[in-house]
Image (tube, rainbow over all chains, first blue to last red; front, side):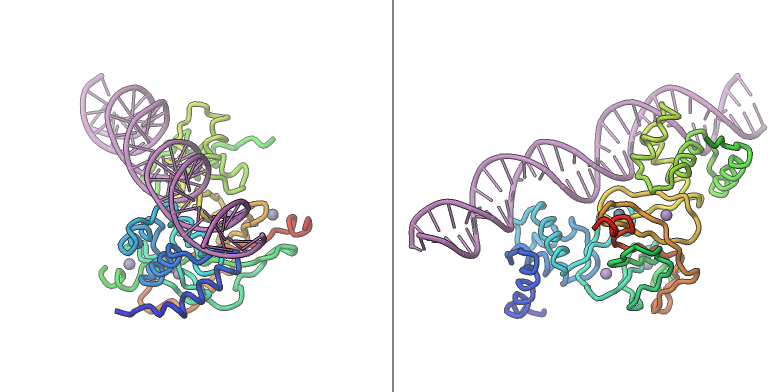
Length: 144
Length: 144
DNA sequence: CGCTTGTTTAGAATTATTCTAAATCTTGAC
DNA sequence: GTCAAGATTTAGAATAATTCTAAACAAGCG
Ligand SMILES: [Mn+2]
Ligand SMILES: [Mn+2]
Ligand SMILES: [Zn+2]
Ligand SMILES: [Zn+2]
């Protein structure tokens, strides 16, 4: 039931998009809203379907464009788990992903704040890292 | 130019394939050889091109099939870095990947042997984990 | 052998993503 | 405000990546 408080959110969106020379558009706002409404790491296709409910004229290409824009300006992350469509996540805190190989659900998991991992050869300059854990989630483990 | 010592390798391949009820075929051997000859994390398409040199009749579908077979029986890993084709790695020791965003090269990097990462909610059963580091490799960092 | 089952093959089909060109919108200079 | 420049959206075509299909092959076995 939560209503959006446009002024504040728009502020944030406009600001972040601005850092990359991008404009706030109704489509970008809609796509961003979709991502935050259900944080289940949807694919571009799923975002498209959800966005169409509120904005039936939105196109496929625009959803890809908006998702890329959000990624570029630091409002969303791409998540690549396995063969198949890229997924998107609006949680910009440092986190990893737990992928349940039974039900396919993707859970955010906390990570230590510093690079935990070791032996990066000298001269290499790490910028970010992704961690994915594969396994069975609590629900699926119980059902076994 | 190193000749293969078939008996030993075949033994290993046959054995591993056997654990999953799969047979050793010339195509699977060829695909496995390709993976080990140049450990640069090729895509299925690249494996296909390389495999064709020694085995011109091999088909696309077979390369996918062979790669899947190798992954299933634990002789190769899939590596998913970003949008685009899946890559394959025959290095089965525990390791992560450093992806240079300038030149695109993928380097194997060592990882601590135990799960470094924390707070997996109770009831969840992790089975494996992947770590990818994005950044600039030593070569590209020097050229800047 | 003749059967069963696993594998390969070419090509079609499907899925995921990007490209293209035209229409639309925004912004800023006049 | 008017208008040009640039950004964005759109539908649909094009491409890339992967999977599917059905027929041919091959191996193991009684
Ligand atoms: Mn996430
Ligand atoms: Mn590797
Ligand atoms: Zn599950
Ligand atoms: Zn590099």
